[in-house]
Length: 80
Figure 1 (tube, rainbow, N blue to C red):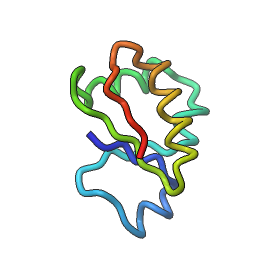
Figure 2: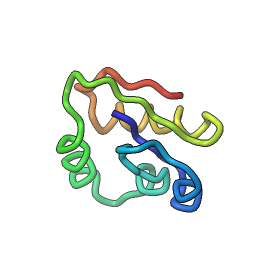
Figure 3: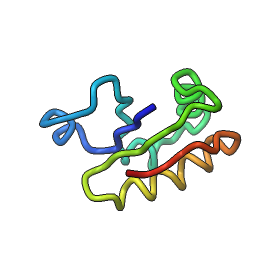
């Protein structure tokens, strides 16, 4: 399962087919963790491998940390 945390402008240039778009701003600064958690759980299977992609690697590292906070029971998260 691929989560793309790049901004919309970069996503429009090129993206992975069937990736889930979750911009960093939304991931880090949303005001409803429960809604975001439910949306992620709807799309991610518990033991599914999860890969986070961004432009340079810095955002994906932050995204992994944040996703582990939101979904502590999902442990198959890597950044690329």
